[in-house]
Length: 354
Image (cartoon, rainbow, N blue to C red; front, side, top):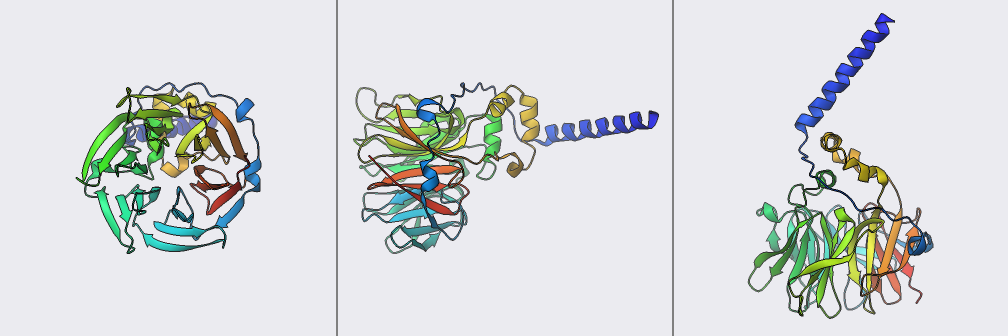
C-alpha cells in the first residue's frame, strides 16, 4: 500500500509540475468572455443533407478556403500550399496561375477584373493581367497588418479587408479563441492613395466580409461571437455598426451576397457547450494555449451553410455529415452554389433549386 501511495504522490507532483510549466510558458492571456446561448439544430436549422449529394471537383492540394468568380463564370480559389488556381466546373479540371508564397484566404475581383487576394502571411495582393503579383499591403514588412482574412472591393475601387487577429498569426489562430482578446479589425485600403485606415476594431476574429447589392452597408462575420455585423457605408446611419444576426449555432467564416437577393454564409464549425464552458475557466484556457495549436483544433466534421434575407433572417440551411465539411465559403454561380472548405481538397458544386 505504501508503494502505491508513493507512486500516486509522484504522479500528482509530476502532473502538477507539468501544468505549472504550461501555465507559465503559455502566450495566452484569457480575457473575460461570455458566449451567447447555442441554438439547437431544429426548425430552420434542422439537418437537411442535400450537400451530401454535391459534385466534387478535385484539386491538387487541400484548403480551397474561398472562391471567386469572374465575369465569364470561371472559378478561382487559393490553396494551403499558396497556389492560386483557376477551376473549370464543366471540364472538372484546374490550372495553377501563381503562388503567393503564403496562405491565400479571401479572394475578390476589382472593377478591372483583377483578382485581389487577402493572404494571411504575405498581405494584400493583386494578380495582374500579365500574371504577376502586386503587393498592396505588405504584412511581412508591416506586421501590424498581419493575418488578413477576407475582402470585398466596392464600386469606388476601395478594398475592405478583414484582419482576423493582431495577437496571433495564421496557424496559431486557435489561441485567439482561447484568449478572446478581440483584436480583429476591418481595414479600408484606397488603391489610389495606398492609404490604409481602420474602419472597425475590437472584433473577435474578424472573418468574411461582403457588400450589399446597392453597397449601402458591409456585412462582417465576427467568428468568435458567432454573429454577423452590419457596417453602414451610406445613408443616415453612415459610419455606424449594428448586429445583423447573432446567436448562430455555428461559427461563421466567409459570406457572399447572392446576385438575386440575400446572402450565403459558410458556417465552419458547430458550436459546442464544452467550448462555451471553457470560458468559465481562464486557468485551463491558459494551459491549453501552451499546447501545439494543432492539438487544440476541433475534431468535429460537419458541413453547414445558410441563406440569409436582406434583414438578417435565416431563410434556409443545407447540411453535410461527411461529403464536404469545415465549410469556409459559399458563392452563387448561376443556378449553382460553389463551396470551399478549410481542410478538404475539393470544391463542391450544388444545384440551386429555387
